[in-house]
Length: 493
Image (cartoon, rainbow, N blue to C red; front, side):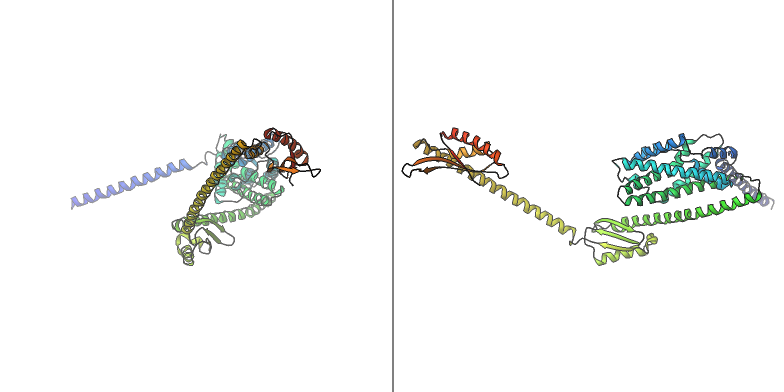
C-alpha cells in the first residue's frame, strides 16, 4: 500500500509540474505578445495633437507643393507609370486636413473640425484645378489603366485607405518619431490618384466627351470614400489610445458640440460602411464570375469564348462565343451556375448566350483552307496565262521587226514603225495611241503628192498648252528617226 501511494503521489506531482510549466509558457507568450503589440505606453498625446494641428493650415509653400505633386501625378497617370505616381506621393502634402477631421471627432474639438474642413475644401479645389489644366491642354491625354482604375471604388481601394490610415496614425502617435514620408504615402496612396483622375474626367468632359463626367464622378466618389475611411482610422486609433477630450469652459457648450460631432460622425460613417459592404459584395461576385468562366467554360474544348460582359444592375452575364452553342449546352451552363455551391452569389444571375451563325469552328477552318487553295490555283493559272501573253507579244514584236527589215531591203523608205512606236511611248509617256500612214493628197486634182502623217491620241488630263509643246518636240524627233523632211501630226480627240 505504501508503495502504491508513493507512485500515485509521484504521478500527481508530475502532472502538476506539467500544468505549471504550461501555465508559465502561456504567461510568457501573453507577456511577449503584449510587449510586442501594445503601443499605448509609447504614445505622446500632447505632441500628437499639436503635430496634427500644425499640419492643418493649407497655404503658402504647402499649396505650391500640392500643385507640383498633382502635376507629377497627372503625368504619371497619363504615361501609365506607377513609379512616377509613387514619386508624386512622396512629395504630396495631402494629410493634414484629413487627420484634423478624424482627430476632431475623437477629442470633440469643433474648432479643429472647422479649420480642417476649410483646408480640405481648398485642397480639393486646387488639386482639381491643377489636374484639369494639365489634362485639358496636354495633347497626349488618353484613357490609361492607371486612370481608369480610379473611376470606380473597389474593396481593395477602401482597405488601402483604412489600413493606410491606421498605419499613419500609429506612426504619428509614437514618441519621437519623424515619419512625414510615411504619412504622406499613406494618405497620397488613397487620395492623389482619384483627385488627378477627377481632373482628367472634367477635362475630357469639357472637351466634348460626356464619358469624362462619368469618370469624374466615379473618381470623386472614390476620393470621398477614401477620405472617410482615413478619418475613421484616425478616430479609432485616438479612441483606442484614450486621447483626452477637449475641455470647454461651458458644460452646455461641451455637451452640444459632443452631440453635433456624434450626429455628423454617424451621418458620415453610415454611407461609408454601406459602400464598404457593397464594394465587398461586388468583389466577391466578380471573383465567382471569374471562377465560373475558368472552371465551367474555359475547360470545355468545344467552347471558343470571345468575350463576356456582366451587367450588375440587371444581373445578366452575356457570353459571346465564336462557335455555335446549342440549347442543351446553354441549359448546362445555367444549371451549373445556379446549383454549384461555389457560385452561391450568382444564383440570381441570368445567362445570355450568343453563338456564331456558322455550324462550327472546324467548318470555318475547312472552308478557309479550301478557298486558299482555290485562290492559289487561280494565281498559278493567271501567272501561266500572263507568261503566254508575254511570249506572244515577244513573238509578234519579232515578226514585225523581221517584216520591217525584209521590207527595208527591198525599199529603203520603209519605216520601222514597231521600234519607233515603242521609243515614242518611252519618250512621251502621255501618248495613249499612235498611228502612221502616207496620205495621198491633191490640191489641183491633177498632181498627186504623198504626205506622211502621224495620228496621236494624248492623255485627256493634259491641258492644250502642254500638248502643243510636246507635239512640237514629237514632230522633231519623228522627222529625225524617220528621215522625213515633212511630217504632219493630227490630234485624235
